[in-house]
Length: 395
Ligand code: PLP
Image 1 (cartoon, rainbow, N blue to C red):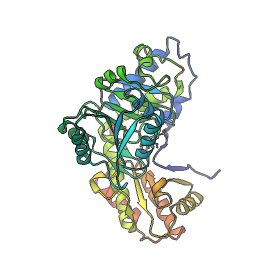
Image 2: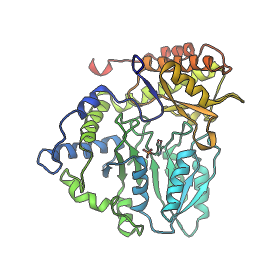
Image 3: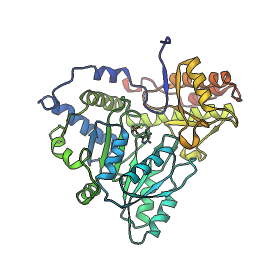
Image 4: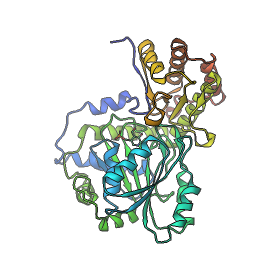
């Protein structure tokens, strides 16, 4: 084992704070016993505040993909059209999942260098005079590219088109890192996972559900059993689950929610934005290019960096892991070996960012990737313009 702590700078799973690890390190309890109801209720109610919703939230013991499937099977029927937008790899995977379930995705193709274009979505909906499209699905923070979609604009585009489609949003890598407002933005189903902004290990996933989506679920014809929202409602109302929940991950979730409120959600979002801006300052100083070409869409959660022509991103990552014990995200599918991704999310602070960027800069040098030195200095300058307050909550 190398000395010191491994730098886990992939864009999720993110670093799990010691407080959250300690909260899990507690005897597993009887999930049908009287003491459990408080744990279950705190988690279910606590997640409403994180999603900013008054509606129902369900929690599954699964990775995010399970909650993707749950969003679709609970609301749609075989052969339904769903409008999806190719922001990157995860949008493509959600589309493939929809196809496998017997839905008909209509895909607005994208170049993986921006968030979803609300105008293009509005245009497709206006052309759908017969309202055959039953849902619009977008990825809020596209983890494969580092681009953010303006969800409020997508809602406005749907409304302006006078279209009744449900709006479904993948918040797997945005929730608790990027501002997200389920009710204000009129989202019908949100999908989330535990292993990113929520700072937990992988293993929990979530749906936040509007009343309109709940109503749609009563008529939805896709087959479902494990994922059925209707099975959750009764037990959830009493703080329980219809099957064995991931008890210790729920202890962890309650601790993580407390930590997010202690810092303040707005401060959490500001911290992520600041780290995103400092990372981009470093990339610019290195003379490298950020994959997301639209500055206003660039992600506070991760930065995908393009490799100079003829240089392998995977080789650079392997050298960085070998020399500095730091894991960086790889390029996925269309951008495999052409980009690397720096995760700057979750339980993360200024010095962790400086360490991360130092590792990248040294790795670029060691792997012989052409670049200018000085990225870390540029990031430090950027951070210095708006100094963070590590102890703000305690003052
Ligand atoms: N959607 C996004 C935006 C993701 O980042 C991920 C995973 O990284 C997924 C979906 C799939 O989630 P999981 O791997 O937890 O099943």
